Length: 205
Image 1: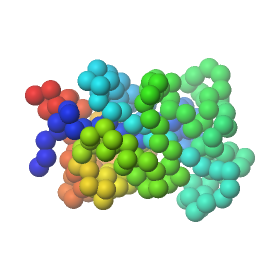
Image 2 (image 1 turned 45 degrees about the vertical axis):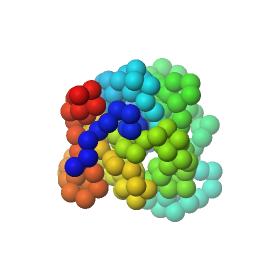
Image 3 (image 1 turned 120 degrees about the vertical axis):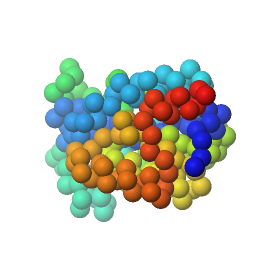
């Protein structure tokens, strides 16, 4: 089993966007809010060590794609995850850009945001090139939803030749049984499953 090495590891934060995380969001994952503190700890460590942090954003609209069949909230009038579409949520004041990363985890200047039109953050994006440019051969993956975009991104990392570790206390789902099953599958064939403290201790050690 591979070891997490700080000089070769990048953090990928998957889809921690307003339209998934905020209260009353069209595709709300309430458990995602429970991972914010763990995300902040990981972000703090990677930023302090000057290691790459990449945020992914799921993008939809304005024209119909296959994805609309499985997530009808994407269609008007809801327009979930449409760039430039703003809405109000139950846990923050004022409107927010629905595709933006939540305020609590806002990317710093220079931290790349990779937009994707599907589940896998490596599919038809610049993510592989970004990681290689930073000398990364290993990715630590967090975010939402565990059994959909997180899992497909871990599989994508595997197929692109990256070692992947999923942070079990920094991923979330609306279906606990699918969350558990996804982590078991990933640990069996696609990478490691770790808790944040384990990952940080290993990289510091």
